[in-house]
Length: 222
Ligand SMILES: C[S@@+](CC[C@H](N)C(=O)[O-])C[C@H]1O[C@@H](n2cnc3c(N)ncnc32)[C@H](O)[C@@H]1O
Image (cartoon, rainbow, N blue to C red; front, side, top):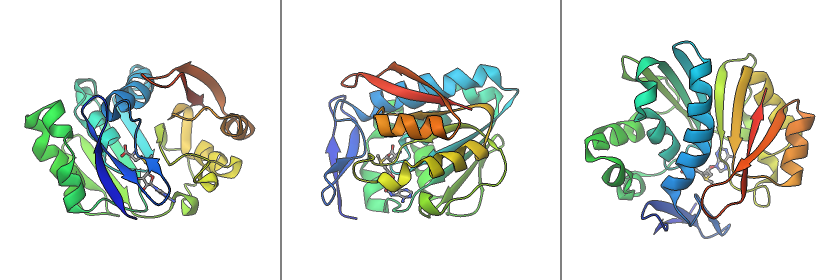
């Protein structure tokens, strides 16, 4: 998959995939978008409801921005965290070393950002005493979890126009089974087809105000 690094309007980098004409993030700002959708309306919403332990699934690990923003949040210091990222086309070293997230979020986090990208795939890796990261290189369309385990899902594939197979009722039913009662799924996409598929899978959905440049986002609760 041929991708080029671009700079979004908040100064943070992102990727553009020419063959499908899709950006990884909003052109209005990768960091501001990720913080708004996944951290403020996802992580910070569920953390107070949990008891010292959180398990997160990300669909479309990509640049690792959502994972990185999660790992550096002071709020997670008092929790143990299991983070699982699914990605079919992992970034190569040239790509992830070109991203400016540590420069913008804190140079002290640079080793953590490298560690996050360099840990091997498929096997759970201890980031520190409190965090375990598992990166799986496979298609989300092949993923199957058979028991509830996740408290939070960052659902971040390409748009349903480009990847309809990722946004089906059947895929959301699989995620529903994989989530604990009260767990939430966040996504940037509010299309009717997505809302209908989420509802049919059993989720309760809420529309929330979007980040700069986007009117609304979705939070789906089990
Ligand atoms: C919108 S981008 C977001 C990436 C990431 N969350 C980030 O912040 O950089 C979508 C991601 O889904 C990945 N992807 C595409 N098809 C996939 C599939 N079938 N299974 C898993 N990941 C896929 C892409 O390679 C890309 O990294």
